[in-house]
Structure formats: structure tokens, C-alpha cells
Image (cartoon, rainbow, N blue to C red; front, side):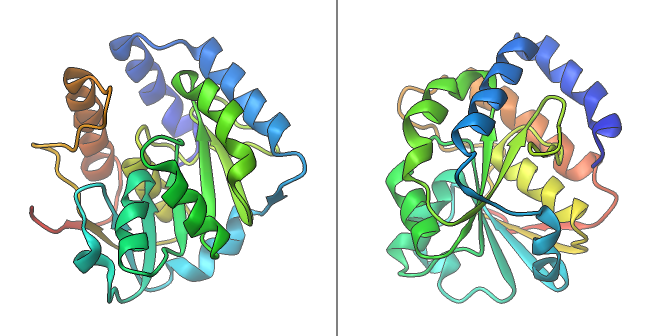
Length: 218
């Protein structure tokens, strides 16, 4: 998704959720600064992974769901724990640095490509957690991109992973462990805000992507 396509949606989200574009931009600048000595890769390097079946794994997935996946595995944030429990790793980890962060770091240490996202609400996590990530990574923003920060579109880890896969050429996308009705609520997370986020995620995945995306029911 190009920024011109994403920007009006982004402004709708900011208005509805009461977020600050300036805060988003400040967090993105911090992420760019703190990753200057990291191994940042061109997103196009991931295109070969998008040629066949692409599985995007959400927070409701468990170890059995990821043990024997066929095709590419893209993990949305806290779903990294399912991979660690199954003694395997995803090809790509898309995260805004919440959830069980040590499992996410372990996946990247073992070879997963990290796609790390900055927004206004995770400025402190960017500051405190980015040093623990090793290996190749891509850094993303939900505000205006530049030559380093990428914007594939998307609002939550899951729908951002779908937007990324679509942008890089995926045409056979399967969602596993996504529950839009009964979401996994992390400690300290506001349930009402989570529900609003997932409404946007569902809309972005199924209404804004011009390809078929299949969902495994939970």
C-alpha cells in the first residue's frame, strides 16, 4: 500500500482513536536514530518469501498451529511465543514491541527478520527494547515514510503484516490465530480500545486489500 493510499485512512484512525501524529513522528524518529548501527535491509529482499503460500500468525495461535506450516510464516507480535514453544521460528516477525518481548527477541536472534514499528504509544518501548533485537530488520512508521522508515499501511501488527505481504507481492495469504470477536487482552490493555483497534484491523485486512485473504476460524 502506497502512503497516498494509506494517509486518508491513517487520518481517520488518528481522529477516531485520539492519537497524535506528532507523537507518531517523534517515535519514528527515535526508532530511526536507535537503529543506525543495526542491519537494516531493503524490504524488496523479502519478495521471494511472498511467492507461494503466506501464513500470518496472530495472538490466538498456539504451538500446534505453527509446528508444521507450509510456506512462509509471518508472526504478528506476541504470537512469537507460540513459535518458541514449538521450538521453531517465523520467517518474519512484525512487532510494535509489546507482548512477551523476550520471545520476540529470541526469534530474531535465531534468524527471523524483524519488522519493527514505531507509533506514539510505544516511544518508551522503542527506547528500552530496541537494543535487544539482533539480525536483519526493517523499521516502519504509520506516519509519513522516508528513505529509511517504511510505511506498508496497517494499524495493528496483524493487519500491518497483511499490508506488508500484499505490498511485496503475496497473493495467497492465510490468517491463523486471528480472533476479531474475542481478542487476546494483554496485561494492562484497555479492552474497549482493543476492540476498536481490531475493528480497524478487520476492515483493513478484508476491505482494503484487493486479494483474497483466508481466515482460520477460532
